[in-house]
Image (tube, rainbow, N blue to C red; front, side):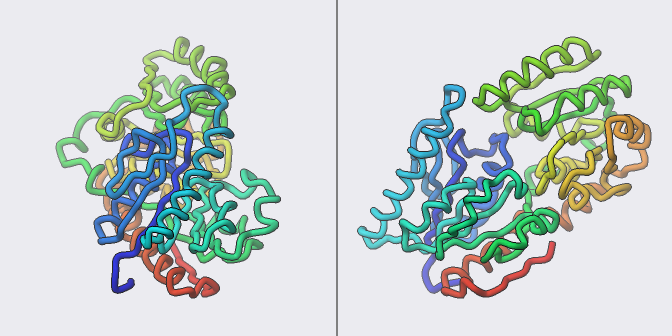
Length: 366
């Protein structure tokens, strides 16, 4: 790296807080990556909502959203305060060397700043408006988080490569006694919204005749809340032995993963990664996932679980779960899902960008 610690500003998604208990993938990845980089000696600052908990310095940009459909106002407030911070730090002689945008949209403000910006693209291409990529600021570079996602951005300039997500393995690995506990119920864990389709997980459990725990968070969007009331609440009443755990803490999440018979992933969109599938593997828990996007890159079919095409196949796959070894899942996680390896690859990108080699084609293979 450089002779002095790099000053890196991480820009979060502004809606909710960043912590180990975050439900959203982008927030979780920021928390894990910033933790790793702080350990490596970088001077890290995180721009996020009040109540966030990070390893380095926290710059509060405002209160998290508490009212439905307040995102546009909150995002504008968030971005304006980040821009002001960057200018202030420059005037004070403590300028940031790099901004790592994990918010999905702050990079569009980069032309107002004289700092290199690395924007991690967390979402499938069709989630982004085409107009965002028509006039990309010259100081912006991108990275993707999976091979399948990168295929959708092949026409975008300055995509430096692929850095697969990683998790803090030491916080998930169960011991032999935990792996030996009889597991009888299924688990669905994540953000409660239509594209993640937790209602399908309830349907799968119902077909298989097994209990299920649905755990997650409903974001403050009216259409998310309406989806919960329309599709989830009635099924929780109908499906035998179904229970709802709202906004589980990190400790609760790990316990749920360690004691589940299998984790269900029922997304109806092309996932670019899957942190929860990585976490399940680290806990020795098999995954049954619908074949969407990068899920086959994360779930090794027949080794750490099964990749299936529909609800019927998912229900059938539950009968074969006993063929999946918890120890094999954990070994696969240790070899492939390390946050330390992820941080090393980002460190190489940071060095390249801060050395003004922004046009170097850095290709990272998963």
